[in-house]
Image (cartoon, rainbow, N blue to C red; front, side):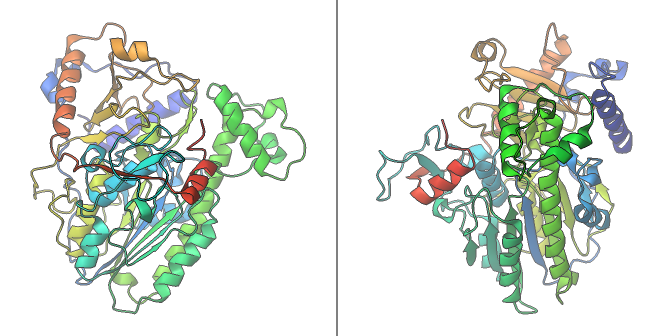
Length: 522
């Protein structure tokens, strides 16, 4: 395999060629790769040995910042077009992970994976109330005929905040996404859990203000863990107007303008002060990207305010900060937008920048990692004993093997099709989708899913997953690689089976908030 920096260069060149319309397919496999065995191509991800501990602080704190619905490739630090100076500067001064992935393409299972260090199949919080929860459980006094049901994060699974609180840290969560409800178990381990602003239009500055209010109550010398969750980059992103239309000029639309994209554009247009109808020439996916980047900029502003307040505290020298996302966002690369409906990289690739006092800063970290690795790493940094139920890897101590690490990045929990799963190593990614791939109209091609349930991609030379290596007449080597990855995928579900799943009836207030996000509409 190419050295990491050479691989990064190859990705950038390939991405540039696709963006400029100068490449129809990624490069063919090299002769070296053609000669390699399927076993070699399906090799596990190497332990992350790029981080070196120098002198960890004795009484460290942790701030976890999550920007909802944030794909990695839009940030300036990753070469993207969004205006994100505070994130970029934070990443420049700390650790920037080049290859971080979510374990699920929507919030509830993704954040459950982060907090429990288990795959969605290992924590069971995967069902969507729009389609009906699959777990059994009591209605808890609400009328099950009136409302849908949703999975609950069970108490048997110990969470990161529970481990922190047991070690004597003061814990708090300020969440603005209504999926992150205390009523379904996400308040486990938090002394203070604030979901008052949990709605699609949650003001980002109100989230920051609530976090700073809580921090003001934390005495100097008192250890703490603070989790702050922003919704700035979630649909509907930011408004668009005629000035944005004029700025686009006559550039061609980069992706198909599907009926769903038209709906997105109309909603974005309605949010602004523009009284004129949206002109036909404004109907471009590029305008959706402008609005999305505007949401990232809004998050970046609040991140700066939060960081400034943290730096003013006397305990900044021994406070760790991690900035990441729960999942990405499709911007109509395949004719669809949003998230939760597939396991392509646009919905799984996430940013990850970390400040770890006492850890040598190599500026960028190339080893692939996922959300389930964060909790064990934070526990290791803070000197907090990890719960035995954790299955991720401590990136600061790769030599410590829990016996549960799969050696691959696994993602699951597509909405309404729990059988859809993906697995990847440092280079190759297999998507198993027996329910069929998504069509541009949002429906699934069940016939194709039944006849060919897998897609295989080389995510190094084909980061946009444009060329399925199993399409047409794939060589035997690719079929063998598929089989090996499928076997590893099947084995991953046996690492840590989920406990008995529970569900509850969704309460009216949360139902209203989720409907505002567009999650519960037919």
